[in-house]
Amino acid sequence: MPYSLKPLPCLHLMLIATIAAGAFVAAGPAAADPQELKMIEHATTDAVTDTGAKGDSAGDILTFANEVFDADDKTKIGTDQGHCIRTVPGKTWECFWTLTLDKGQITVEGPFNDTGDSLFAITGGTGEFAGAQGEMALSAYGTKGDAYTFIYKVK
View (tube, rainbow, N blue to C red):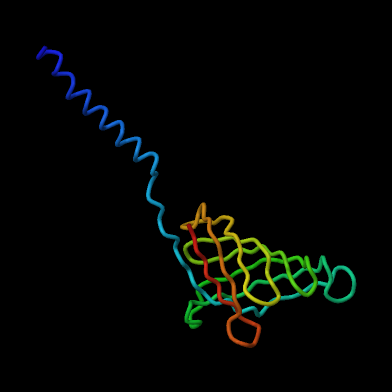
């Protein structure tokens, strides 16, 4: 009988280790909080090409290549460039652009609303942002209509 009891602690330890490992796998690694990047875009190069009916109409193209500044709007930290296609005249554009910073690039895509805030999907990146996911919130900055606050929440 004593001989048959000796393997039991070893079996018991294996069972505990298996349960602990299973719990770790089920829980997965702890999800890191998204990295938040806040900046101000100066929309100085925006240009609309009228492609369809005269005036604001579906299919018009908005192109831009603008400077981007820190959250205090004092120091240039990068640039962005992209394009939008008018989808709903007077209301919405569908946009795609690339933000370029010293540490890499971040791409976004989604609807830009003529009024109010907009929310974009982060679709990828390069450098320190390789494989980036998350979202980017855009809102008007100031009252002139020529600057925007960008808040990137990068996972």
